[in-house]
Image (cartoon, rainbow, N blue to C red; front, top):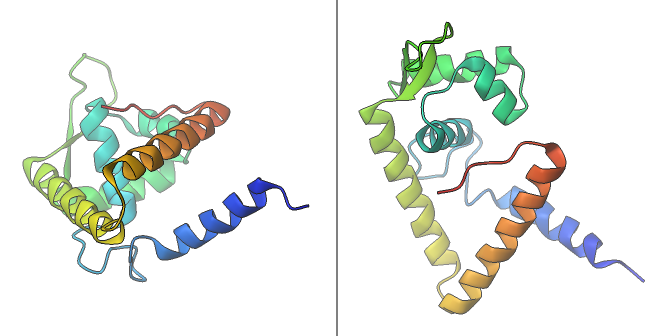
Length: 151
C-alpha cells in the first residue's frame, strides 16, 4: 500500500514544476520580479529593515548568496541600505517606495493567476486549501527552526 505522503510528494513536485506559470528566468510570464526578489521583499516588508545576518538566519542562506540577491534588488531600486534604526552597527535593507509598489503589483498578479486556476472552486474549498497550506508551511518552519512572520 502506498502511503498518502507519496501522493503529497508527487503533487508537490508537480506544483513546483508549474511555478504558477513561471518562465525560465524565475518570473511569472507577466511578472515584474524574479521569485527570490519577491520573497526577499515580502520578508523585509513584514519584518521591517533587516541586515545581511538577519536575512541569512531568516532564509537559511549564506551571506554571499544574500549579498548577491540584495545587490540585485538595490540595482533595481527595490531596497536601500540604511543605518540600523535601533542604533546597531550593521546596516540594514529597507524596501523602497518603488519596491513596495512592485511587490504589490507582483502579489496582485499572483492572486489573479490563482483566481484563474481556482475559478471553479468554492470560497470554502479555497479557505480549506489555504488552511492546509499554512499548516504544511508552519510545520516545515517548525522543523527547520525558521518561522516566517505572518500578517
